[in-house]
Length: 140
Image (cartoon, rainbow, N blue to C red; front, side):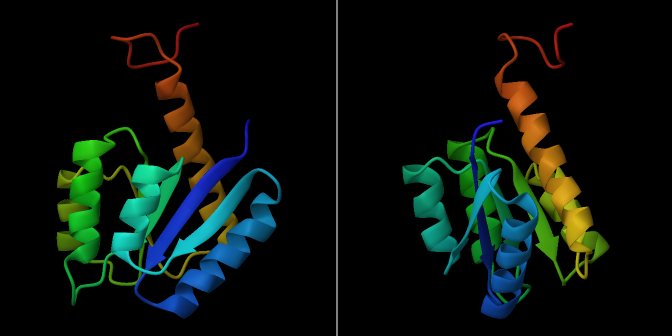
């Protein structure tokens, strides 16, 4: 698998840094894990750079993360988005699902479980990208 770029956006800089460093150590040379300082910065990176997975923590005090996910669904619909949130509620889960988020995790999470979820999200995306047009599952 080629080097992947994972972008993290979280309104809590400490949480973002812990997630970034933990994932980078576990993924070693499989991926470059970076932190965007804001949803706007994440948007620019997703539009101008090759981001393979966006990990976002929606803040209930702001709609910026929701707006980011909505915009990505419109402009880069195949970019996998993972929600990793400390603000887990059934309402947020449902809302993110309606926005097309397929990967949703609640904090706290063991970093090994997060690594597995990241692998699953990237693998699913990689398989979907390599399919012939009109197919929704791997061709044997």
